[in-house]
Amino acid sequence: MEQRYTNSTAGRLPVYADSSKRQLVGSLYKGSTCQCIGEQKGMVIILYKINMLGDYKVGFAEARGVKAHC
Image (tube, rainbow, N blue to C red; front, side):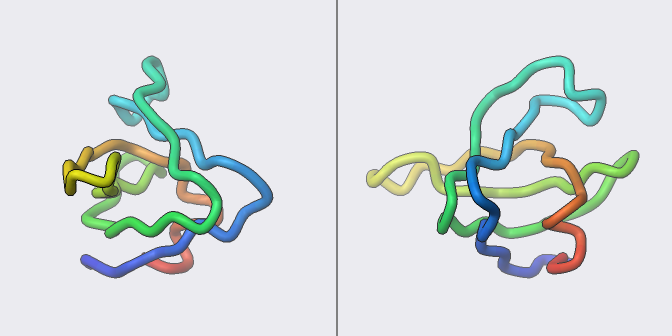
């Protein structure tokens, strides 16, 4: 399932710590890329770069807009 995705929506894609969307932990900005690494409860699990140092974060994003690319 590991495929690349580029956020081409009009704004930021919220990223959550859990599939229930209880805690917002970040955002995937417009034009940013991520890897889709799985799916759980209608949410996709993404791996994305968080800074210029090469650090990465994993989180859950809503499947709409991402699912078609995973």
